[in-house]
Image (cartoon, rainbow, N blue to C red; front, side):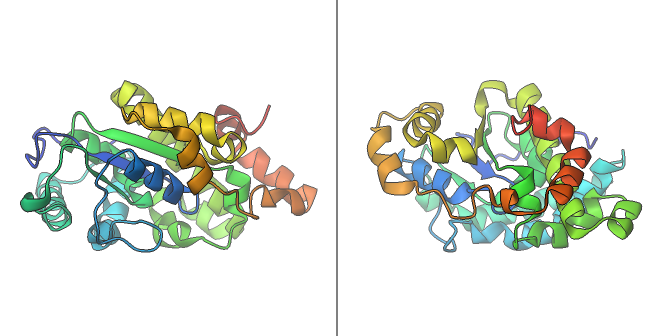
Length: 263
């Protein structure tokens, strides 16, 4: 694993809230809950609430950083230094000093790949980890993260001999297990994992959990009513051939069980 950076970036007196996930997991609704809770998640965002200032930084550094991390190595000191400087530059663009507030952060799903790096920069980082059933994710038309980062996360035999759905669920498994391990071992009370299915099935209860994590005194019921609407694609995997689903479940059984998707 890549070592944590020894010198945190001195950007603010308060650490950020970061919302991350594998793509298409439902991070947008959690970002909206955070805004209701008083968090400044920036203004230069797209329709999915993603902070755009980090886009090119993620494109440049995720594969380099994760590729080293997944294969037991680490970036050189010079590379890590450049990475920190470029992150600082993106952060400065995202959060000018004139607009700083005590409760701030950003939503960008791909930050999940750089969680260990962020833990080193912000010792008091708050991270909300959104997770959606890996079978749904593997069968989604949104495979942007697999296309961008599959080469860094998967071995070459997996990339060569596995179908797209199989590659997708393997990426889902590794990225989410790694984030869960870091969250549980490093962030502790500053880590919250939310299953998208639970948010849709029990919107008030899960919204209240998010609101409590953020330390806000607001009514979760009105927020849940305004923001949460289960998509038609929820549990899409049930419409696919049982043999395909069985194959995906064999590949990722441990993670599906850990996250409560298999008994």
